Image (cartoon, rainbow, N blue to C red; front, top):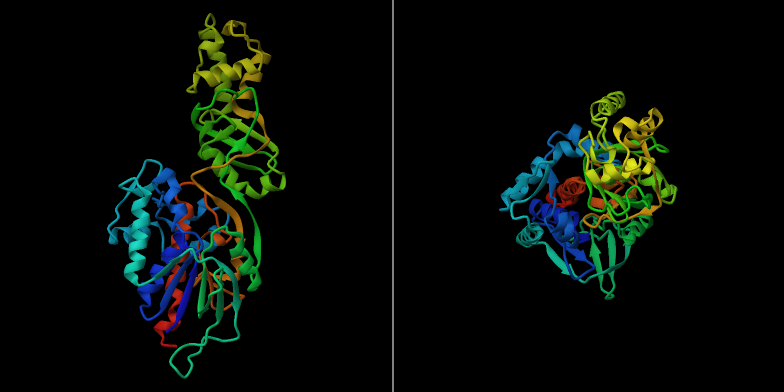
Length: 421
């Protein structure tokens, strides 16, 4: 009987174990989780609702949401994509719903629904789940998995647990997320690991223009990292420590390495009104200056933006709160226009995006066969989930890459059992 060990009790670990056990019932699948709680990240994701996937069913479009790994995932998504995820959970009694922005959640709005579904599916498939079993070492043996005289296979790996117990395994799947131990074992077994650095984080910015405006949001803004020639658009939220919201989170993902290399200290440009062409904005300001000449500038914002933000931006360029539109000089108008479309702010550090914990970096994708998720450097070793150098923007994309890579690994890792080898 083929012995398969899945290390990591998160989304990828469970999904691969379930897929393998259901596809190859003659294999013995064991899932090891170091902690006492299974699927811990799933439980807290999406504010406790679990953003399972995203309603993007075109693989060519879907891959555009991955700063790293999109090219490798293109073929993978042709085999298992969000539609398959939706169907899989539906077949296990969990219906998903789509929100306006495309994010998909269980209709219960409770991550516990997903956790319970995965645990139940694993138990029904015959997966042996072990919690509190931390792995301390992983060693490749000289065996090649060929059948011995007793009908068993010669084990390829030895897994040592913290308790001192030694497990023999023919195949190993690492689904350890961003845990440093997983990277360590991958390297010891011959794989290259790209330096893991944070992705999906907020910007710490100490600037009087946004001080005390926590909670103010703009439905659509454009943020740009001029040093990296990167920009993203979307909702923007001012926080106690700086800036957050989808636009910032997406920019942090695409600029993860650039920002890391600069110790999270660089400038960011903000266009608060990207829906307007610069020249159109100028013309509108000139028109307002004429049409609302007797009104106070600070209390008559001609654009769809929060009043408090408008007041702060006009004040920041020296416009007195008693100044009227008729008194606005051309130079002041130019300064106001620049502040609206290209305000420069200094990032002084990164914050945490508490609903997601995503890492840029991981096992080099060129060293993985994306048809099977098996290591090209170490036969019998498979990968799934965040341990790979794959990361997506916020919105359910990281879970989808976990489901996809786990499904591919699960379908392939037990193939020897299916062939009776």
